[in-house]
Length: 470
Ligand SMILES: Cc1cc2nc3c(=O)[nH]c(=O)nc-3n(C[C@H](O)[C@H](O)[C@H](O)COP(=O)(O)OP(=O)(O)OC[C@H]3O[C@@H](n4cnc5c(N)ncnc54)[C@H](O)[C@@H]3O)c2cc1C
Image (cartoon, rainbow, N blue to C red; front, side, top):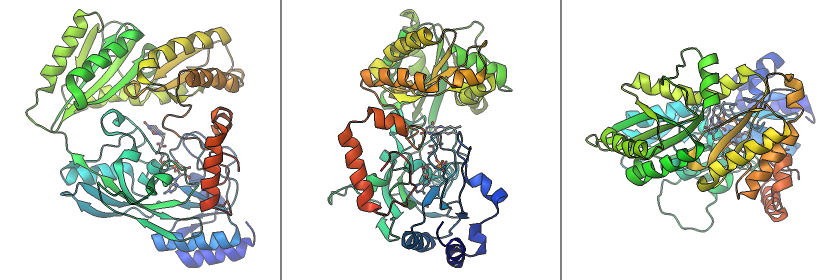
């Protein structure tokens, strides 16, 4: 940082002593994300308490040419909040619910609100905020918006991009852009808020948001179905969706390897079936009508799927505790995988109709490259979003396996692109996927993004080095 002590003093003057962390040991929790923690450093962690304080800090940094890395809950998976310069600006003190408008079905929040707290507030108002993901107890809505988070309800409700009506953003020059409208219809030129959604903090700092609420489900059924071929998973998905329509809220794929890893490594995780099966589909259906016989309808679909030999077995959750147990088998897959050894991860999407083709062909190419590599392809298959993760062969050293990361990324991403898919479905680009984005994106895409970046942030201070090189 240029003029370090002078700038530090001025920032402290803006946010107060409580709003600054300068001790390296205390700064450490603000430097890593969920997967990347090596080498991240900064000169100062700044924790403003208001939008005006954020604006004043950014204005000062713009004048001094100080880089700013915005930070939410630090649960990102692509190194988006990892930094080597300037200040980290954490939103963790900005966590107030500003307004609940149940009639308008909107919730207005500070960007530092924890996702689980937002869900709870919506619930208390008799509504639903449907964004739901494994890190919801610690990620912040500002981080969710900045990564355009997906999660398990996308099938029914869309990504968080679809769940936001208004935003408040501190621009890289320190001005506050007030786009906090709570309107379902607003056709007044460009939809500026969407620029900041998924921008990973490179265009400004989101400080507030108006979120859409939905009717609260009054009925819910969760079932884990056992399926004995990959093709049958998609056919089952089609049947369930055709029959239940948009009451189908989640359709998640769990392969046999994931079941084995979870039951081996996660305390309390239990395979609910007597026999092993090659795949499992975790299905959740919900309805805002208490009287809907979701269970009956789902059983009927599964019975026809059983007759058609698409499904071998199924268990229904009989209580909320059992629902959580079934979801635990899905949510703890990454944790179980990391306990098994080294793993190489891919968060990709292809058209739903090509998802099984993708898995089958990718498996062949991986096996041909390094026989014995254990593939754990799981996730939001109802959205075509597959977490195509590779676990090391047992007989290979972790480092030797990880040394092949680049080669495996290329194999998987080449196939994704061949099938018309995306190399980042829901986690973003950050630093981790920057090279891959540069490799696969049409030049015009990068050029347009660069122009937008430089128009808003000519001094390049906002989360430098993320998404693409300037
Ligand atoms: C166990 C686990 C499960 C997960 N499951 C899912 C899933 O199902 N779906 C999914 O999409 N993701 C998932 N993730 C990834 C992660 O939770 C999401 O990306 C989340 O949205 C990040 O929020 P955060 O507050 O932790 O952001 P951070 O990690 O703090 O930041 C992420 C990026 O956003 C920027 N940023 C943060 N706050 C702001 C702000 N206010 N203004 C501007 N920029 C900002 C940062 O600079 C960084 O580039 C999971 C992660 C974990 C650890």
